[in-house]
Length: 101
Image (cartoon, rainbow, N blue to C red; front, side):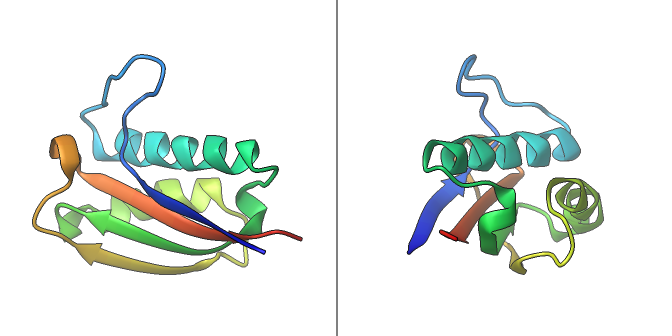
């Protein structure tokens, strides 16, 4: 079974707040993914593919640092693209596909 998680922007579900810093935005987007996966009985180790959308590709290195904190090696397959805009003016959006063990 595959679980598809739609793109998560860095909005804290408890407060509705969105951090300004791109690293903090990446952390929040990944935390949102983790919570959705947990609700499905899965974890970050079950992720097989991610797509990272960036408002500015120059933020790739900063987001990559945070990404490496969230996943263990071998990392899931990943695509990263710059887009014209992300909802709510976010700098980062991340979606994933996970596999049930």
